[in-house]
Structure formats: structure tokens, C-alpha cells
Image 1: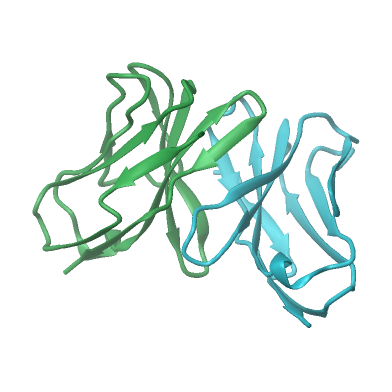
Image 2: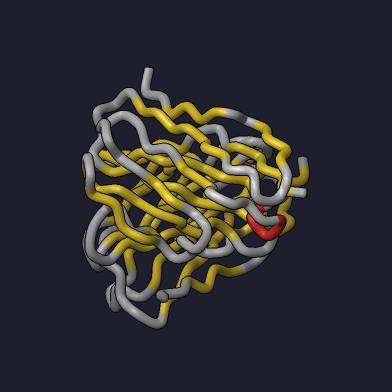
Length: 110
Length: 111
């Protein structure tokens, strides 16, 4: 079954404490992306990756890092989270004619 | 960056009615995508359009890639209660990685 998994699903943390949200896909897709979703602002792309070791900025990359060391994994790293990064985060994986989103990670930074 | 204007922002319709929503952009895209998001879940891809003028159907859903490459339309025929959700359009210009999303259309269907 085609699947994109994210962990954790929920996270409450404090300002400045580094965190990583993992994303994994089982479809051998080349493209993977991270989005954040905020009320009234739709989905905004943070970073995307076109293949292993190839990443590029989306529309809102500030305060985030990513890495793509293996094709199946695309973790999102917040080195020093701030309250304005409180949001719902989605990972997505894309192949020819198809795209799948993960179930989302709800992050709260206090 | 590029921005998409999606309208209407919300719709309240009666079961059985047809629905139309659209997305417009000030710049061109090479691919248009339409998604549906149910509460508490990630978006699900409904239809992908790759060619200007293309008209594609998926069951009761029909989407069109505008001839100017700056807009796209989604129609839902004979709506049913499970059509409730948020519909997003998205555009891609250079590759399947970089996507720009509209702000969504929230659809409510009254039985």
C-alpha cells in the first residue's frame, strides 16, 4: 500500500529546543516536499527535494532545514523553533502522475 | 513568489447541485493540480492537468487547464454529502517539486 508516514503526529515543545520531524515514503518516488498549513493561508511549501542530496527552497524556508540522504526519507529539522512555527506540517511524495501526502504533524512551540 | 487566487472561499450548497470553483494566477503554470482535504487528514490528489486546454474527468469531477495557462477550473456534478471538505488548486511551473497552492475552497453540502 502506498504510504507516506510522519512522526511524531503531535508535538509540543519550547522555544529554542531543536526538533526533527521524520517523513518516509515507500513508493520509490524521487520528489518529496514539506508544507506548513495555517488557517487562512492554505498550504505553503517549505522545502522540496528532487532526489537524493538534491534539495531546494520552497516559499517559506526560513527557520527550517532538510536533508535527503536516502530516497525514502526526508526529515524536517527546526534548529531553534520559535512560536511562529506553530503549525500543521505535511510531508508529500510525488511520482509520475501521482502525489501522496502524509497524515500531518501538529507542532506547538511555546 | 507566484500566487494563486482561488474562489470562492466557501460554498454552501444543497445535495444534488453542481459546484464550480476556479483558480487564477498572474503568471503561467505548466501543470495544474486539484486536491481535496478532509478534516484531520492530508490533501488527496483528485486530478492532474498537464496541457493547456486539457479537460479531464474523475468520476463526478471535471477539471480544465485554462488555455492561457493562468487558470484552472474544477466542477463537481450532482454533489453528495461526502463531497464536503476543502478543495485546493496548485500550480507547478518547472518541475514536480516546486508547487504553489491556492488558499482553498471550503465546500459544505446540505442533505
